[in-house]
Amino acid sequence: MDVVVNPIGPPDTEWTLYDRLGRHLGMIRRTAWSDTPFTILPERGSRLDGMAVLHPSLEAALTAIEQRLGGTCELVGGSEP
Image: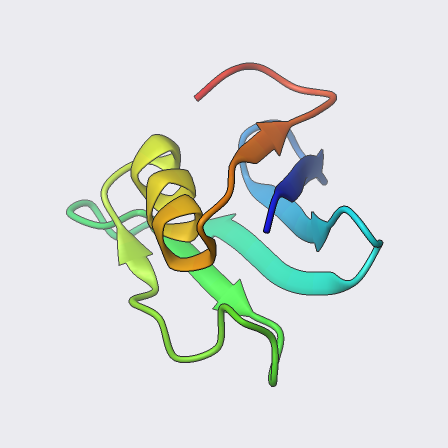
């Protein structure tokens, strides 16, 4: 399943996650934690529900999502990770 990743809010702080059919899968949020500042917040009941949520970079979070869903993540409307 491919995922569309769209930045929202202040730059480099939050991203929404939708599949190609427009179903909301969750969000990624940048936090103040120094070791794992990127947190995946899965939508309850989505295919992301139950996966590891703490990641050291946006790229690592996107890679984890790709591996979980067996597809690709497309970052739109923002800078590359």
